[in-house]
Amino acid sequence: MPRRRLQGEEFSEVLAAMLRHDGEVTASGLYSYLQAARTAESVDHSSLDRHLVSELARLVSRVHEIDERHEAMQEQIARVTSTPWVTARFLGVADTALGMRALVVSGGARQALDVGPALALEDLDSGDEVFLSSEKNLVMAKAGAPGSACGETAVFERIVGDGRVVVAHRDETLLVTCAAGVDPAALKPGQKVLWDRNSNMVLEATGHEESERFVRVSVDDVDAKMLGGQRDALERLLNALASRLLDPELSARYGVSGRRGVLLSGPPGVGKTLLCRIAAAEIQRRSARPCSFVILRPAELESVYVSESERNVRAVFDRLRELAETTTVVVMLDEVDSIARTRGNHNAHHSDKTLTAWMAALDGHTGRGDIAIVATCNAKHLIDPAMLERISEVDIHVPRPGREAAREIFAVHLPGNLYYAGEAAGTRQAMIDAAVAMLYESESAARLCTLHFRDGTNRQVYARDLASGRLIEQICVSAREKALVRHLAGCGEGMEVRDVQQAAEDARSRLASQVTVRNARDLIADLPEDVDVVRIDRPPSGVKRRFRYLRAA
Image (tube, rainbow, N blue to C red; front, side, top):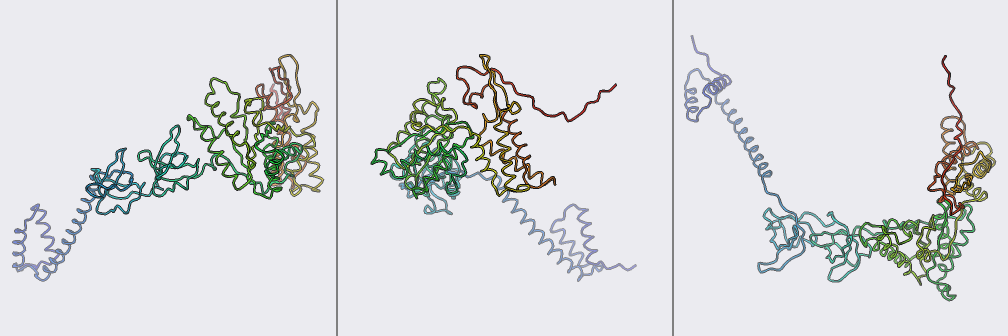
């Protein structure tokens, strides 16, 4: 039987079977096998040659692929097992016996090192963060610019010279240098800077303290018509400020110059801040010079660190003096009674030192005709006598609004351009009359609560005793919202009298719940001083029963 000639594919299968059988084939054994196959009569030599060439090309490609994977694996192993670089701060160039070296600090230790082949000393600026080799004996690369650094903040105080500056950090005063990107001459007292403790170097100026310490409010859009009542208080405040701010030179000729303390006292929400804004706007209008209205909350300058509060007070007043070089400044010390409590409490030694700093700062404004300071408070009797003498040369009491003042305030917050039901002017006037009547009526139905004193007497409290401009504004906003909700629900369009009546009733209920035994004297001004409030009786809520209960047999 003639033997069949083997094709290339069949020869490959035979070869693969041999490999599976032997486990491995040596080069000499494979060569002998191929020689025998070529001399065999049953083999198609041309087909075998072509197949061997294709197999060889495939094997060479496979070997190259394995080599590439092997190199990638070696790189990954080297990357995982390599020693890490160490960060340091570049201080400058040091001239040593071995040549110019990079002076760096790492972990509090200073070193003079050479730079790697990929880096030049000319590429480095003081303050740059750099990478050292694992042995910390070579500067390998530049990590980043000082502006990208993070760390501790300090407060700039003054320039010493040779690029050195004095900064304050908590209760420390430090002498440090500045990085290459920081211009010491551009820093201002009280400005916060970013500094590095290890290198004792200022890395970046982070901004001025003005955005954190006080708020500047525009007075360009303020009109006296926005006040509504309090005309007497506004006139007294304007007279106290105008005599010194409008023409300081003329005031000096009359001997009316220097600081003059102005105190606005009164319950919360009666318009003390708005009074100051309107006064600043009027000063700007009369003097034809820009006027900066500054709201300064003294409690925000308090710090838990020793002497930091006093430093904050000095920095703020330094900034105010700078601001007064270009504009007239009206400063409102908001709620000064929060930091000016009577001294002598054994637990308030730190606060007493801060109050002393405040009084020294106020005394430092004597003779300045471009800054006016107006203090506001809710409880004047809590202020330290020495502080009270400095801020109350002009003492203006801002009372709660009476009936006519309340009518003016309602007219401000219910303007004629709102969406009223029916005839707009008539509905608006009816809403104002209804709201004023509900707040200032004296019938027993309008009673909020009854105060009982220790001596057996009592006092009826009505809504008019707790009325304020802020309360009236809240009633108007609530009435507008109620009308909008009713319109969206399809229950009528435009504001109606019932909207302001519901809002006023909600306000009266809220006021009744606010009066307690502890705060009654703070909310109501004309209570007897020597008799304590021991109990408060509130009338029934008056909520109608909405459900009927059936008794089962």
